[in-house]
Length: 556
Image (cartoon, one colour):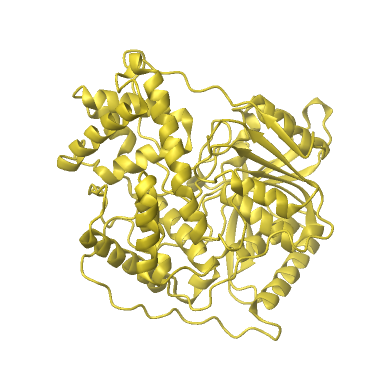
């Protein structure tokens, strides 16, 4: 299940595309990656936690702290943002063993309006596989001004992401520019091809990463966050986690409740250990189907602008006409049904792309494939391909390492065939994305943390969720609030489904988040805000469809 980075204000982070189709021949059984070195007595997890505590104490005692300097050109961040690196062990059971560097970005608290500095606000945008390096840029947005006055805004690239010990599982150029064709109802032969592709991808992860592959986990992401907090000179963590970042924050709160100051969980992943991660992925299918309906219902209400049909079913028929056409002849030579699916999945994540997506369908049906090609074609650049592969690799490694997954293809086939009967839009694309976990070459996978228990000393926290979110269905917010206990408050955006609620779309939600971050107070145990306004339709004659965007992938 991919939870793509939730958008914050006008800034969004890009993730990866769907895995390309791979070899038709069945792959040989995978050789397991080398086992990590034996851990000291008490078990590996206990040794890793002791190692994290040791490294964090050392970081807290370091006199100089992190050395923030102008950011390297590779980060593409403007002057006000400063960058640093924090060194962490690859394997926390060996705290003095090999180390990796995580990149960190910061804009210092402005102090405007006489605001007193409250410390650092650290953000994780989700994925897993998303980079938060852009986060300090939000200090320039009006809706973040009061928060930026009181807090240093701190972003970072988690292990494996970007320049933080980057992980990849295949040559990023493999298949670049070749359109993919994904059938609506996959045949047995097509499923066999995708199973072979998943095995090949998992094998590539093992071959490229070696024994290090086992160390890309949520547990280690939490330990890295603990070290980053200490290196920033913060005795307690103030944290904003979006999407997968909510699960990361929830595990941190469970492991280190005494080091939590304030935490905002935006678009919450269901932390129930029985659902991490296989069942959470299954749970996305009906939620995405609802959001796909929401987009089609919106387009139908604006039939006078787009001409796609006056009912959701008529809009679906228009989409299927386009789908059948690009299956025969890829749009612009690069957009097949796989690229089309990825582009319109983004409409199930973010309703602010609805006008462009509807306009692209309408233009295509009028004989102009240009807008669809611009919106759906993958980034052809070498850097774009590398970033997409990097995000997919980290996503895959973390989820596959985090929990046991069914190893029997028959289980996947049965569960997803049943789901696809009522929720066809995203079911199979999501299943194929996660299928490397069925043959993952790491013997000793993690066991999901029982979030919330025990949690002595955990202060008040704030969960924020949209009722119709497809990527992180609303039940996850209810479960997270329940597990965090009576001190956890929940703000619900009623009747909305945009993935990522915080940051300038809904004034009611943002007032609650700002109040909590600035004062620690919440308005009540459960609070409801009305939905943000729907996007306005864009006339085909009034504005061209948007240029190529960063397409977000199928989901956690």
